[in-house]
Length: 205
Length: 205
Image (cartoon, rainbow over all chains, first blue to last red; front, side, top):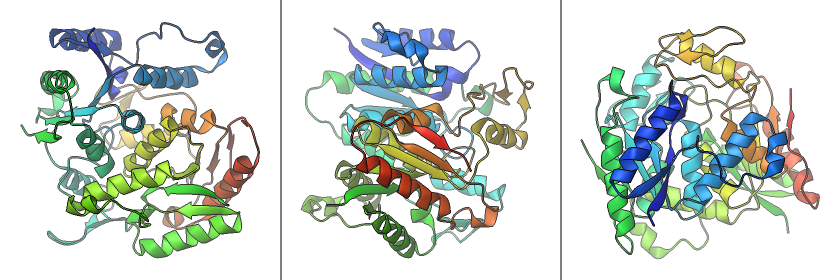
């Protein structure tokens, strides 16, 4: 039976999200994985969830999907700020606590520190200097670990031999280019086939 | 023995983070809780972690702290964008998957939809109309569930009878005012004392 991978990401906010989910599922199938979208129905959804507000039902469904998957693949393309979508990051933490391997990809290759400095430049500025401590206009420290995003995300990927695939894309293709996604799916398929722990690593562009 | 609560939030990025952690710990003690800061040393940190890069050690330490706590209190004040800090949100998902009650507070009371629309207004604009669907400049849907932040966060708080405390603050007091934090600690102390599940709810300002 194919390993099941949960496809986390703000892609569900794109127009025509079911078509996008179908394209991603098809790429997963090519690599011998079953892709599960947050938009998929839950086969045996408890009847009493029907009484819950829609947002609550969506959240419970996403958590139930992750529990039933063998791994999680996250779209880490920065979303409305320097970091990934918080819904996606919540799901990464959730999967990690359950011991599921986490894989990540992004259609942006620039590092977290530079993205945060760029953001700060249009939001009150930043104080610091190269090689020293940087703080934003609120005095909050800007992380300088040479990572792609917040350190918790990267540690979750490393924890169980996951991989992080980064590809720079033209801004207008940032939400529709599936090339980094496909490379990430291929990496996940490889790691999920191999028995035992593999070292986590970053595949640069 | 006092219940142990993990204090998640971007407060660790403030200048003098150890002093802030001490003040928060002291507020927790007043309410009969033991506050654990991400900056606290781990009593029995594995010796081989010393070989890891700093960012990785921090992440593993935070996860170990959460595993040893009875609940999590999260600072959800928006951080570099419309949503909470992704490191904090990762930890909420992590705690939730372990079944720990999650409590949240913010020094901002405005809802997620309006904050996202305000953000979009200075990042390419948004298309839509009140009562209809809104999309940002990338065509990505803007959530309209009347929540305070992404639905996964709010569902985690509701799941185990947690509470969400919101207080509007002057922008220059956003990272230093501890009043919403203290109300949240009091709520957590009350819920953690009560046996059995309690309904989650939002305490408005």
